[in-house]
Image (cartoon, rainbow, N blue to C red; front, side, top):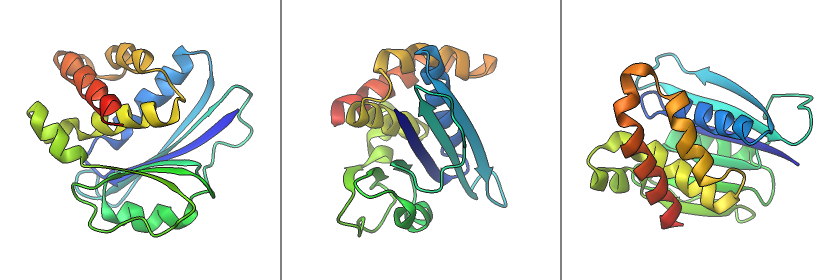
Length: 177
């Protein structure tokens, strides 16, 4: 089975880290993956998205034109990617900063105040891991334990002190769904 995923938000929200973590965890589970980043004009504050394809088979085309799954962390990303979603797709929306509802009725919507939940853990920067943990629970594409273990390999050497709190954020997101 092939899963086409878009993760999108502002630069600085950890979109690329989310995508790399998802891809790395999928590889750890023996799946084929592709990860393609896309940055806006600026990295921090500009738009950023990445596409991830996870498959049991060889991936013929890594381009995600019609994602079955999306994690949307800001309003411009919802405006851009909602129309492109595959029918009956799953879309997780960060309602802390997205100020409108998903309009399509054929999508399975998960609304989650990721920023607010991250602040309860002490820092808004954990919103991406809250979202990814919730996505993991909702879709079942990747096991939570695999994501948690993979953090050590995805976070840079100078960020290894953040592995434990990011694991907690993944767990929290998982429990919220």
